[in-house]
Image (cartoon, rainbow, N blue to C red):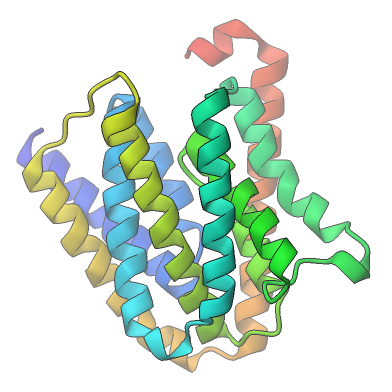
Length: 253
């Protein structure tokens, strides 16, 4: 990979890590789309996993005093359950189906009755959402807006939301790294210089977002986070629907 392309990707990683550091979401969704456009799928997934582990890990470290550990533990049980089932079925959806799944899940979560609306303090919900998000992660490379909707359903302030979700994401992306880096048949090759740039850029972008998150109110955080979820989910629904209607020609492209 040329030095110019590595530099461009590094700048993109700083920007996406900044966005994720501010709202705890969206940056990874943008980055995976770009990586899939320029790299083979296994390599893109491995690089994305490394980038997101660095970004989320550094974010969790910066906000470690605000992590809610019980939801993290329950969420990881759900992840382990999904990985066990995945190792048996190994179902891989078509691209339109994956996009539609990513788009529809947050809206489904919002339509649930008040008694069972997303609540990260609920044990059964934590296990369920952990399984669902890990399944989406292994199918599409990202867990999409579903995890964001889940954590915004709790009575957490903005720091607790970002810190707890980041900790869960480290486990999710580590599982993805193991899967795409060693379990699947296609070997993933990755430039070590690009990997180092990815880690440094992710940590820089996350650090730059910290002061802005501190200055933001909880109401502003929730308002803009929900708008981001709606925008991203709507894009996935429209794009997935277009691919579904366009048929095999569009999918191949």
